[in-house]
Length: 521
Length: 104
Image (cartoon, rainbow over all chains, first blue to last red; front, side):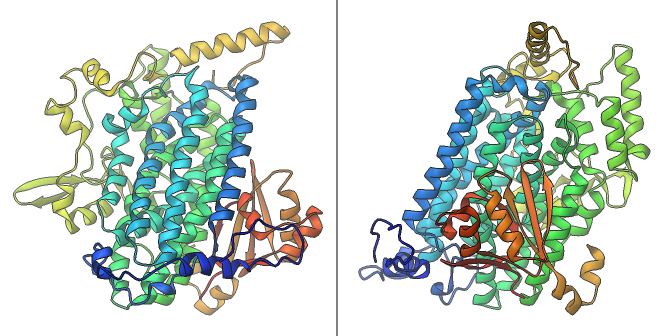
């Protein structure tokens, strides 16, 4: 195996990519001699997955240590140059509006900690898989994930100097009600066996849904003047392509190794599609409601990145192995015209207890929603906002009183409706050992009923508040325990961020003696 | 999509698209041009900051074409700097080419 410095001549004498990858992943592997192999890799049997030949794992990226380090260093260099320039040039003042940062508050509170969780668990896989190919791919992904966490923190720390809601995200993640949605999702995955985790995160989250999470969102950042987020997003996504490959390689490898694996893998796809999909509910509302300048609607992005690419492309490929599209996928499709509206309407009413602010859509925004959702918005949701507009005119901006009931599985408030019946709230009940558990959908109920011993243990934020475990009985008690401060929560108009923004923009306008009207302000 | 899965399988298989999403930047422009040249059936879609290139069945990225466009040596690993996402399967990532296609 040669790791000589690369020569710049066209006819290089170094090994081919394939040979270098072989040397790294096969040549450096060894058979244990003083312990048995199953003692060295003790976690690989209990899920029922059968692997006959670990050597059959082939990483198409054929990544080696030298090229990994070289390109990751280059990616970081490019990103930090952008961050520095943006900070030096007071780039935050060129955002479309300070309300845009609500999306980034949800991001650093809810997504950044997941990167750290992924870092930890891929490090575990890098130790525990019995094949050198997947071990090395998992090692790279583990390092990628901690890079993502770090670059996200560095990117958003510049905004944290000027704006609310980003100062206490690690504690927020552990405590705040809506953040238990991503937290419980990921901890559900972390507490699975190694193969289920790989299907949960490597395949279902990274391959099936990562595009929905990152791509339209990063375009949104680009369109709203958030150059640093766009840059970290794309920098992370370039790693994500490798992670998608790992996920896809993983599923094909498992399916090819033994026919008995097919049924197990199908069960995991069914479960983790729905678990991951429910987390994207937070993204749906960001796309449709939190971006002052819109890129594409949730519906469009769901159709493009999920229905067309995954159902139309990927699942046709997996049909070869006897894999069917995820159970409950039809429910997700039926929900695409409702999801973002239902979620935002709820967040709007509960943002008095959140690490971000919300505001009623402007008339222009409502028109955009009507046009993007011609079959549902005018019928079900526009009237709510028109009514709310009257409330606001009369000085009565609406906040919910009381606490929402949460789904036992996804932990989203029970705000969803039955598939195909947009005005019937979904309220599913399961009984387990004499207790009743509530779930928000066919998908979550199916997941609960499959593993009630696991999901009965859920740390449901609302139950915890009512049990007295969250700082005290009043809203201010709970907010203090959440680590939120004045200015973090509530209505955007008139909030600290909004007032600062108007003042800063006013200064700029006064300087040029050409006052401009700011959208959304 | 429902009509796609329900449709005649063999016909669908022949036309199933694969795609790659690339960050739209000055340094990636030659890479995008190379892909367009080597995959004449491809279509491109622009969203802020991104180019999404799709083609029926297969997309190939040739080292030689990229090197012509970029005017210097370019190793296929460098494509990692450009790619944001893809759909399909990476069938080949070699010294001279990258191929994205479905397996079945």
